[in-house]
Image 1 (cartoon, rainbow, N blue to C red):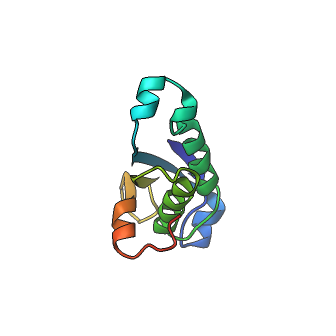
Image 2: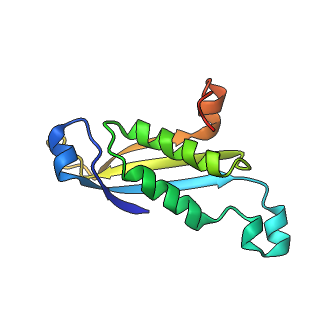
Image 3: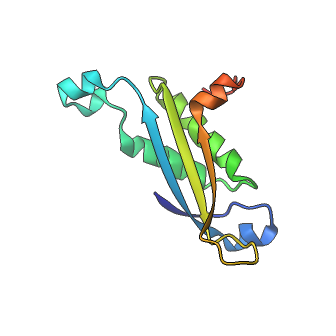
Length: 120
């Protein structure tokens, strides 16, 4: 997923904004949806996209905070998700050199295992 957002520690980053790429994956029991072929038995990825888009629209200093919020919000909407992960790339970050992106990768099971009591 590609978004324009205003994340960054520096005022200029928040004012100008940047392009971000987001990858998201999840694990759940898909057997009912696989047999029924009914969207009501599945985790609707359009809903997942909408949640991620909403979280990307909230400016944050750190991509770690955005990733955490994405995982929390998706898990709150879909408690049947057993595990999930997100990676967020800030494209061409302002680091003073040629760099494609800066990436944060976060996994729900790691957060839960390390005391993530505030995960839905």
